[in-house]
Length: 157
Image (cartoon, rainbow, N blue to C red; front, side, top):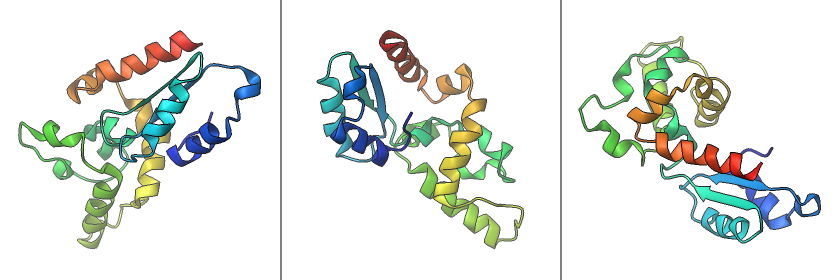
């Protein structure tokens, strides 16, 4: 299984799986316009399905309440107003969280580690994603979308 949008583009362009005649499911971030072309290419093949996320990036689907389980921070990264979810889906979470963590570290929180955007993506993928629950997806208004991905995966198995 290939992870990372840039890597997936090569799999689509080079059609590496063609000879295996296997179903394919691709989920691309919405933040890169050229991924729309990859989605079209994949969807044009039999027994294949692709989609771009409704939120900007896959990291937007990790509930911010989980951040403090890895990073020694308070909830100040998230706007605590009742409508914080309205802008959440369009935030560049890795970049914005990285800037926040770096400012917290500069302010004296030396316990913060792995604060680069690439490390944040790694932490989210390998650790925090495992802690996501249905209720957290629902709070992000993402449950139906994510459940739809799994329905497509089941359909294409």
